[in-house]
Length: 373
Image (cartoon, rainbow, N blue to C red; front, side, top):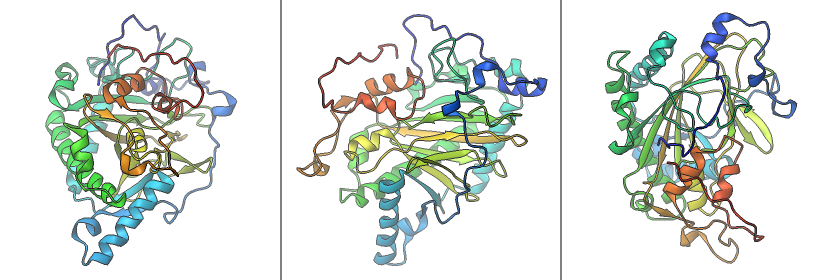
């Protein structure tokens, strides 16, 4: 999870946005001000709950009859194919655990800066406290503080970055991560069934799955029309599970039919994104979703994100069952570890990192991914 740069990366001064907010600057620092084409629209049309796909996990696992289960699998298939995104309700993770995990994350972000800086995210890496995906001194910054940790398998953990405060932080994150891991494994079973495949196909293909967690804190911003909380991107994972803070501002937006659609979270639901890995494995049938975060003038926002992906040792490519004359192979086979290196050592820029896996229609020289993981 944490690449080690081959050469020092110069990222310049990265201001801590919580500290910036406290100082109440009269203008937004230039590194946070987006180019005109990237700035969010202040009042995008609100999404109604009916617009956003909802999957009832309890109907998949405990449906009263075959018709009910089949109907929910069809909903899941439509969500994955048309949106790359859905909210899952009745997911069987205790609500008290969601609440305690949210409280732990919030307590961490409210610690004094010097305490949080004991766990720094070094330039070019993606574990620790700070901002990830920054690779130059003039790169635009997100209005966000991040705290990210590798969770599974044990060798991707960096024990020095697991905080001692708040008390029981590590214990809570471990219990939460086990439950989310279980949910991911089960969702992948039903995603496989929705594709007409064996329910265990992803489990067999993934090996010992990689899991990481990232907590994002977005303070209020006096000019939300100038900044982004998180740059547009798709996730390199197979599945991403997002928990949004209760009562927070609506900050998540997904790109649907070239329009940024704000996502109002359903209370106690979890948001699921299809990642680049599933897009490749399904030969583009199920597509990863491009998404971003925007800020609010008066309200803060907290999100807790879990990334679930295959083992770095696995070779991946489109599944043969999903390639035919009408659906020719769109992606090459590659080592998932190589793709992960490529993903975490490039700035967030839409779905550009997926170009790594695409079969080139024209013969063009490709830059090799950086070997600095």
